[in-house]
Image (cartoon, rainbow, N blue to C red; front, top):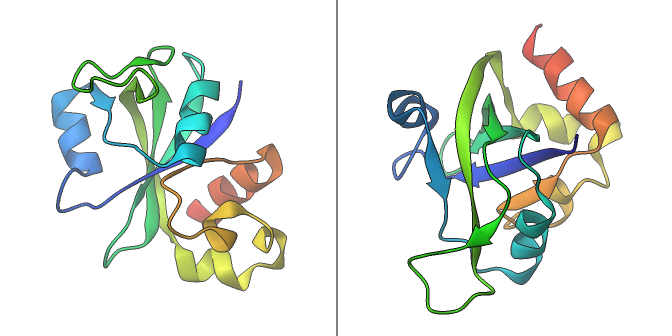
Length: 135
């Protein structure tokens, strides 16, 4: 299983909405690197749901509920999507500031390519975020 982080502006779509919907299609991604990451996702992969904007924090865990497929709303097959479903809220959100202060994260895309909306999370960093969320 791989681990990911996906970002969304919470005023557009947030974890509460996903819990209410029970499942949604993760779409609207056009960045080539983010699309490459979506193409690498597999059904069952664990993913952090990260709120951008004023919040800047990982708030919950979602599951990739489908393998990637072409976005039915687009005419170009290179634009792919996955379905996602909520798993659980983090006990406590983990903020970008907390992550920035921890040397372990210094080379992670969240800090290096801050505008990237979909990124892998190495297992050691996944575990560290889970640990921070329980403090």
